[in-house]
Image 1 (tube, helix red, strand yellow):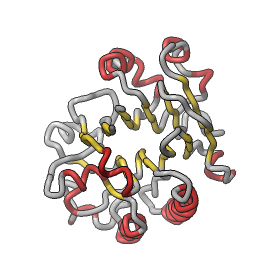
Image 2: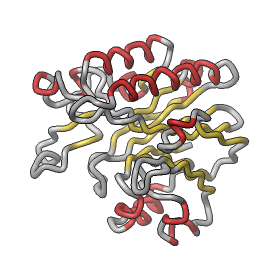
Image 3: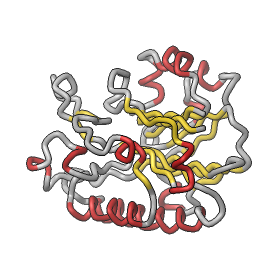
Length: 252
């Protein structure tokens, strides 16, 4: 099974940059998108009419903002949103139950340049961890999406210059420590413990992506019982169309 996650920074925008051709070539069993910035009715018709995948969407009340969507060939038993209004109003989470596991597609809030939304982000993170800890009592979990935090200095090109930037604040990184200490495994880092220069987001400023001055803020986490079934986890920086790139998990 191939699962791909990608913050597309607008599904209508990425559609004009070869999204459907990329999707057909990769042919994922499950695709999780973040920051879709659209209701389902606003999706390009070619995407809405796709035959091989069912589509679930949680979009934000605010137009052109946030939102997550999941495309699946695999049979989904049940799908829920976060069921906490302030997060569902921003289209932050989809929770899918499959036969053997839960898949959580999530888009963490951005703390903003002035750190105004850092408390909201940390509150969301705490609530999400409580929800995940409940779910994992029933089935193994796969959690994916844009966490908007680089965990360690290996996950960011310029750690010293960003120590006071949201996405790399000590309190944001401390939550990531807490999350991992609860037993959730960052599968890319588990498989590639010493790999540097592996990033999933780059600023749109000129030459930043070309010089690979990036951040790794998009993740797949799994619960320990899934580890023996993991085949590979990769980052695909060559795929353009967004300021993020896709990440891939292959699981037996």
